[in-house]
Length: 198
Ligand SMILES: O=C(O)CCC(=O)C(=O)O
Image (cartoon, rainbow, N blue to C red; front, side, top):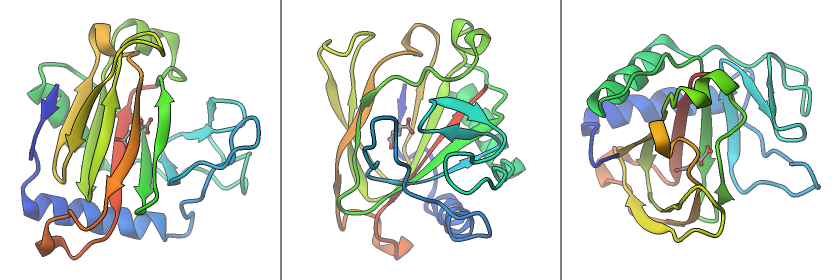
């Protein structure tokens, strides 16, 4: 479910402020190198639990990078995710968030979010995605990699929720449209937060 402009400009501003502080904080965002050696095209910071790009598993500390513990999920972020899940008619008890910063060259290949617990995925607990800043060209496909995809513009303040039978649908970001963030935000690039329940 796509919830365009779910966040007011004021709430977008608050999310950006918090994200900026987190990605440049004591445990900063970094560019993951994944299994096979490829560098991702985002700066990533996992909150609550760390997603290890080498093992594709969650862990408490960043053993693929600097061994620092994953910073906690801020309570205000967790309640935002619960609120959005409810607005989409679903329920989520988020215990982790993957926060990604995309610059003008940022992108993310088509993938499934399937590293959370079997219980969570089987229950169809949704992924709640929140975007702020520049618009992204987001692809949302089917349950198989080769299924047809819809291209959706995710704009600043948009939420996107996929759960239930859609929980394992392939998705990715082909490009960022630089300079499209609302001018009032004085922000270049894009933050995307995906909240999940392990
Ligand atoms: O940036 C987005 O909209 C998608 C992010 C994503 O697919 C992920 O973090 O798994």
